[in-house]
Length: 327
Image (cartoon, rainbow, N blue to C red; front, side):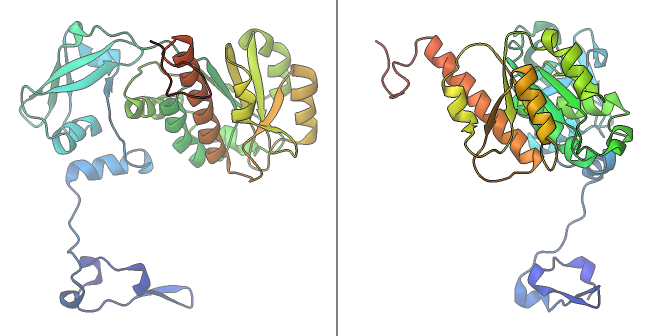
């Protein structure tokens, strides 16, 4: 019996002298399913860009140069074609949610052409403009490139208008020479995947990369983030939590700065707070990884903004009792 033909539980994996030994018993007694080979299309998806991971599509987005008048043809090996065929299981004439990157959104009609290519039509009839960019900007000290590549999609999915990738004392200098930061199209592709996950926006966040944090704050911050509420995410005894800090502020743009693994240095904290008017806020006593802190902080901010919009529109009576509605 070949081990590669069966799924082996983790309890049956034993290590001897650094070498892994798989103990596989008769599958008839364990009722283990036979391992099925991946479809060729899925193998292409998982192997592209080094196999970053699965892509969840709540809205298909296409670039402007992919649209020819009213139609767009996606090859059979494209991950969007695979999603429509094998996840949505669409037939000819079915409709899917679609949009043009940095353009309008609507419903496209599916048609399968010879060779398995996907033809989408109806782009001229798209009548929904994307929402205004969220009033949130993120200043992020660059984490490890592999972490950043995964994080980009989450950042776009939660929603920011501008993303500033900056240097810091505890950022490895070699990160700036990584293939990810040297290839803007790769960053853009990850951001678009996050927008497809969100399903309600087509605007790609504006990305700025700076190697000199002090110079950026001194020369560009005043114009770049005018009239913004500035938050420095930093674990500090006695600091307010981000949710508590936001509860006292309702209007205005928000700029949040999140440090690298190991956090901001004392000198950087003094520069942010003392010179540039940032206020320190945290997520509690626990020290989090950069990707976790980033997702948690942005989620709290977006929740606060959504709640503020509800109260501003007059759909909820009071903040203390959100179930009381105005008549």
